Length: 165
Image 1: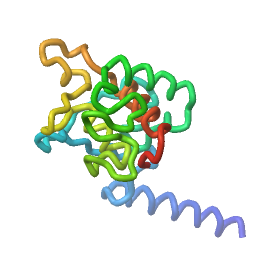
Image 2: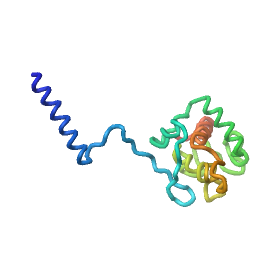
Image 3: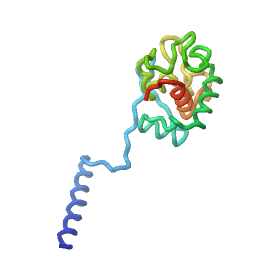
Image 4: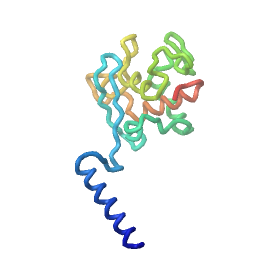
């Protein structure tokens, strides 16, 4: 019986090696990145993950700060610091611009975290300037929100009401 078990393990590893060699089996550690696009022109967005949480988001599209009270508090401060409240209201309910909490979003992309990230990062053709590093101030690539900070702003927005996923 042990010989059959050893033979089965050898055959399994041999088959896996062959499938991997022919590109039919990928190692479990390889993860595809999400594809983000510039909401103004459809071009790919190049965003660097500046923290482990931002890198996780860029791999999965899931905001790891959703429900994290410390990140939500930081997101609120950033929302106020970057003057988001001037247009979207103090609680993201809408003011001169539409609200951000749903269930009906001004931009359909805002219904999920990837889409809201794209809008915050690159801006829109409808008047909102990009807040991401390299977009907010083309003369200084260090001005603007980092990827991690944008995720915290999104966590705060989602905490305000009927936010997306």
